[in-house]
Length: 456
Image (tube, rainbow, N blue to C red; front, side):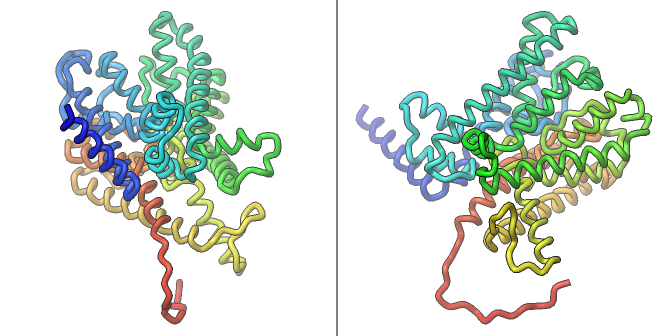
């Protein structure tokens, strides 16, 4: 008994030391552990309706897609997986959306009424916040997620009841879809799909609003809760996130509508209400949700390319969305504008953005582009599909969006594994990379002379 207690103490010390020295690395390991557990559970015979075990690759792909809140699927979610399998997917979406260390901090808070230093270090790295804010941020994450998901479930329930699914089945659909929407996971288990709600404002507006709240990020929600009486007191991060996000929704939706308005295979078959909703949803779902009321595979390639750009940008930092994040994109745009105008400083909302932030933004964008470029090349080698479809699928996986032109299920096992790695990288890779770079500030006593090479 004493030996077991000593082993437990040594293990706890090792864990705490690792959390202090390399919190991002430990978070990655725990995320991989959660994906492994989800894959194992989805590989069981009880996880499928037919009781025939899913292949390892299909279980891995689905488990990764759920935990990384992506929504790409290789099998029909509503007909292939059993109730047990769907519950595993639901829990994966919930854990992945909140963040593993945020969930652990919640459990710690519930049991001991406080969050230890180790949990604070891990949660701070995951949510890109300061140690002093972790407690408030964890509580806000729990409050926002449960409140929004509960409200969405209540709003969805009457719609499913009206479709004669029955009380229990409608209740289950409402809960699953509420978690999927808020966490920007994009899994749909409705027998008729989302197309049946194409012109239903009462159903789609809550979907869009719930998705936007989840994609803005918990730090923004905390800031709004503190300063909702005077929005001028919002932090620069919140102002940039909200304005850039909403601008991209408006621009992306408008371009989507112009291109697809008369396409008989997409918008053309809808009435005016359906077209407007599809445009609005199209501008928002490329942030990370991945739910569409029209067949993405039938869209024009120009629409795919616009969606590629929007999916690559993604949503807010420390949110349920993926991509390089809207604040990264905003900083890059502001830097370009300042350079064009010849301004010495990069400014926004009465604040100056330092050069270290710009360098970090450039690094994140460059790493994201490199990951997408290498993955696209590998996908082209592994498949005989055209570049437009491969690029769309790769960016959708990297941005944890879940939109697809319809090729996911037909991909070879090697390509599915590649997309699984890409979904994981898109969910935690750029976040960890950004956090690691931000902590690598080195001061040098001796500096080389400055000289400007030719640019452009």
